[in-house]
Picture 1 (spheres, rainbow, N blue to C red):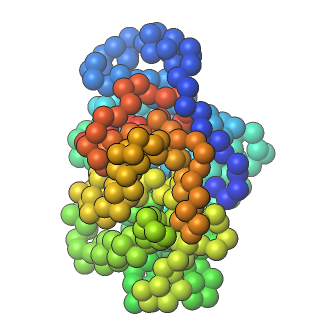
Picture 2: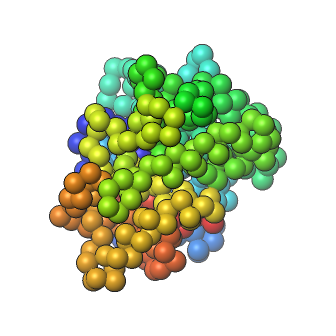
Length: 340
């Protein structure tokens, strides 16, 4: 998820309530024109997309963020829902775009007097927004989408990549992640399908080192006896990656996207240790915990959400949950895990 320091977000709402069943049963005429195979999209859209094009994080007091907007764009593109895509794109640019560069403020709080008081960006959101806009521009012959995608790609490359310790480091945001020689990174922000698409458009000379060094960091970010990545890591010297000291050293709600993007981006080998850990639990008949402390080995006393289970299914090639849950983040992971 986009960086949310200590917000106390509850990601454990696993129950599919009556609202979900009723919503799925009451499709509008516009919904019915979509293929039946896109019932997941219709349900996700009904639960989390408001009429203006704002994706609502229902598990976090109704805020929105660039992550959610990026997911909405990607899911609408995949479903061929051009109308919803355009609404999401317009809301994202009008409400979240920064005035000084083609990046987006990471958080929108409708209850605040200044809904976008924090102008910092979240690079994962910007990557996926640019990726979705680029694909949609080509599919629907929208030069405005194509142009905006190019602007975002250039801004990410110019403002969110630094050269440090002999590597091109993809920062989680433009502010707050560099402290002297130490750089804090989030391996789950390495959205491989987006980066690969950028390299095809802009060339390896632009994105090749970013991709190569992000892969190297992912390989180095394997901690503890199970060799699992933590949500946040710090690199303080060449080849030295450790769990970030100011955050819980967990393979948890952020890092669950490391194997997800690895699977989506044709890099399952980057998640081989995660796959082995998950298989060991399944073969022993034990539930997979929602998080693991990569230093002590402590495991959560509750299981992965439906979203986490979908990621397991995507990486291991096993069954995924057949219904969409009614928790924003878990449901979004389910949608991402189904992306082809």
